[in-house]
Image (tube, rainbow, N blue to C red; front, side, top):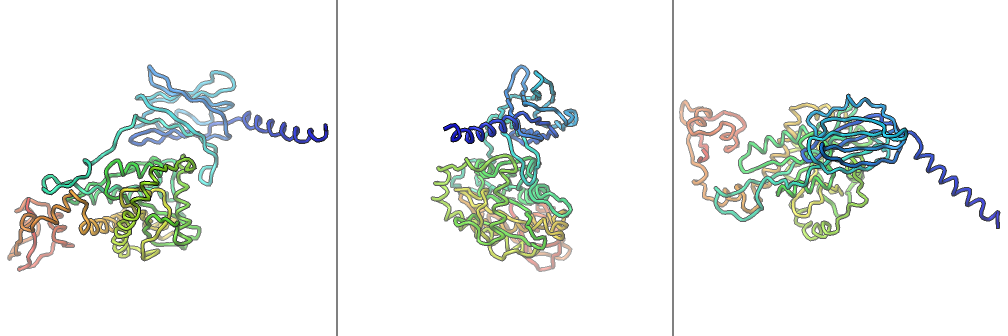
Length: 446
C-alpha cells in the first residue's frame, strides 16, 4: 500500500514546490512603456519573470496603484515618456520588503484593467499590460444612413481607413528594420488627405497615431462611425525575402486560397496576441449570426471594390496575384459593410522596403487605393449620399460647358468661376493644366 502512494505523492509535492518556486522568483521590471490613444492609455511593464500583481484605483487625487510581488525596479521611472498622456506622474515605493509598488498619477478619472502576457517571438520578456480607459463614447462622423433626394441634404460616403498594427505591436519588419506600423500609418494618412479633398467623401481614421487597437475593435470603430467601407492597410513579410508584390484580400468563408494567403492570415490574426488581447474568448455568437446573414452581399461588394483597386495598383506595383484573394482576416469580419485588406507590398523584400519608405511611393499607393474606391462608389453610390444625388440630378444643375478661347488658361478660368484649379482638373479628368482652343470643359456650379 505504501509503495503504491509514495511515488504519486512525491510527484505532486514536486509540482507544488515548483509552482511556489516560480512565484518566489524575482520579477524585475526591465522597462516601462506608455502608449496613448484617443480613448485610452496603455502602460506596459517588461518583467524578467511572471509574478502575481494587484491593481486598484484611488481618488482625491486620481491615481492607480500597482503592487508586484517579489519584484525590483530596474528601469528608471524618470525616463518614462509621459508627455501628452493621461498619466501625469509615475512613482515607486515598497509597502513591504516583498512588494514593489508603482503609483500612476492621473489627469482624469479612468477605468483600470490589467492582464499578464507570456513571451513570444516579438517580445522575449514577460509583460504586464495596464489599460486606463475613458468612459465609453460613441464615435460617429455622420448621421444614421437614410434616403435623401436633395443634394443640399445629401451625406458624404464615409471611408474607414485602418492602418494595421501600432503601439506595442510593430507588425512586420524589413531587412533595414523598417516597421510595418509606421509605413502603413503614413500611407493611411496620405489616403485620408486624398479623401478629404474629394467632394462627397469623408475619411475616418481608425488609428491616428502609434498605439494598438484590437482587431475586432477596429471593425467596431468603423461601424460606430457609420462607415460605408473599411480598408485595412498592411505591408507584411514572408519567410522568403524574394516574395514581392501587392495584394488585395476579402474575407473567405473557407479560409485562405493559397499557401501565402494562409500564412499571412495567421500572421495578422496573431497580432492580437502580440498586441495584448487573446482571441480565444472573443467569439460573439450574435455578431457571427449577423455576419452569416449578410456576408454574401458584403463579400460580393468587397470583391468589386478590390478589383477596382487592383486595376490601379497594377500601374505602380507588381501584383502578387492579379485577382482579389480570400483569407480569414479578423478585421474583415464586418457583418454590415464591405471590407478589404490591402497588402501594399512585402516589407521583407529589400526593394519593396526601400520604396515603401519613400513619401513619393506612399502617395502613389494611397492614390491607387483612392482611385479604386472612387471608381466603385461612382458606379455604386450608397443611398442618401451626395454621389448618388449627383447621379440622379440632371447635368445642367451640376455643371455648365465652356469652350476654350484664345488666351484662356486653366488657372484664370478657375479664378473667374470661384473654384480651385485642382478641383477643376479633377472635374474634367485633366492630368495637368494644358488646354487647347476649341476644347470644351465642364465648370461645376457652386
